[in-house]
Every structure is written in structure tokens, then in C-alpha cells.
Length: 366
Image (cartoon, rainbow, N blue to C red; front, top):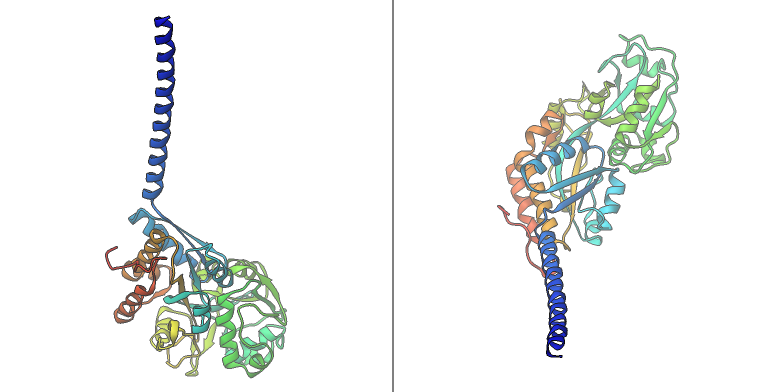
């Protein structure tokens, strides 16, 4: 009996001990998993403009190699990027459509300029090479209004007597999605054409009077490349990648210029950055070398942050761009923001970005 009792008691103790060990193992695994989650390298998601995408993607790859942060950028257009960061499905957005003070305040956002580049009209006209065709802003607007329908139109020939222009229909290509590139392009057309300004105006998404739409700068580039007689507008880097013939434009000084770093730099030098959110649109600026259609891409981030680790990583990425991204930007034919005093001013404002307890999240050297 005693042996049986001891045996039963031993079994009970063993079972209880086993349960205790199992619980301890479960608890230790849970703690380990929690610790791993807390220690995991943060993942930063960006979304937005296609205009700066080649530079942002190159920066993201390099920053990820140098840090322990996985950074992904989804090139979905400025309008979609704004929607995603507003909904907090992206940690930051890039937009070529600068937001006003009221728009930023409404959605708890801050906005910082990052990079500039030329928006260039590109054509596919048999026999016409890169930077051979000359257009004025007025002629460019008339092409997009459908007033000029063939490439040998007398108004075009008057500026291009040295070229043999074919009797070929003009095939207008524009963006089909909400686009910051379209915003800057139509801002320019409104500045140089009364007819455009009165009938269509400025917008990231328009009801275009003529032509066919394509999604993203990539889509416009491919449509122009594949369509004889086509004209489109893309960021300079896309024109190089797809080997498209760029157009010379007459600038505000009356000179025909082609897109170049010097031309973008001349326009960027005229920026004053005095409006809230550093709001600037660089079209039709003074200067002999100034390229007349320059886009600026802006970085959007929430002032109030739900995940402090991701927020710090995001701001470290933006700091890295300002501190180390210039060489990559130049290689990809963009012009980075290079004014040290402006960058100091921008970074000093990051003290407004806080977690849900009101703690400041970024300090130099984080």
C-alpha cells in the first residue's frame, strides 16, 4: 500500500513537475520571441512619386547596406503616396505636389524638400534626334491642347527651319494616374499659355483634351518609345534610360536651352523656401541657363508617430540622404539639396516629431 501510495504520489509530482517545466519552456519561448521582436531591425516603407524613384531606390539600397534597416520604396505616384502616408500604410511619402500649410496641418504632416530634376518633353519623330527639335512653351501647350496636329505644322517649322519635319500626326501621351510630374508640367503650361490656364489649369490629374494616358513615368517613356509621332513628358533620368529624344525649350530669357544639371541648378538657386512646408514650384524662372520645368520632390512624414523605432529609422534615412546621398543623385542625373544652412534648418524642425508620450524622437547621432 505504501509503495502504491508513493508510486501514485510520485506520478502526481512528476506530472505536476512536467506541467511546470512545459509552462516554463512556453514562457521562455514567449519571452525569447518577444525579445526578438523588440530587437528586430525596423522595416521602413515609403511610397509615392515616380519622378524621384530611381534616386530614392538607389539611396534605399545603399542605406540598407550601411545600416540594419530594411527600406522599401513603392513607386505609385504622388497622389497615391499622399493617400498612403495619410492613412499610415506608409511611413513616409515622396510627392512632387507640395502641400500647403492647411493640407499639412489637416493630416498631421511635415514636408521637406529633398531633390530636384528636370521634367523634359520627349518625342519620337523619325529623323529627329536628341535635342534637335525646338519648342516654345506656347507651342508645347498648343500640342497638348490639340491645336497642332501634325509635326510639319507651320508654327513648328518656323522654329526648326534646319530640320526636315515629316507630315506625321502628333500622338500626345500624358499621365493617366495622379502625378506630381503632371502637376509641375501643367503649372508650367499655365504660366506660359493663357489658353491652357483658362481652359485646363494646374492639376496632378486632368481631363486631358487629347492624347492617351499611361501610368507612371515608366509608362509614358515606353509609350513614347513605341509610338511614331509621340510626344510625352518625363523626368530626365527616364529619358536617358529609355533613350528618348529630348526637346529644347525656350526659357524666360528667350534662349533655347536643353535640360542639364546647370539648367536645373540655375532654377534651384532661385528657390526661396520661405513658405510653410518649404512650398516651391520651379517653373519659368529667370536666368540665361535656367531650364523652365524643374520638379522638386518632397518628403512627407507624420508629426505624431505610433512606432518610435520606425520613426527614428525613417528620419535617419532622410538625414543620410542629406549627408551622404549627393554622389548617387548626381550619377542618376538629379540635383540634391545642397545648402547646408537650409539642411540644418530642416533637421532642427524634427524636434516637432514625437511619439504618443510626447518624447522627441530624433537627435543627431541616433
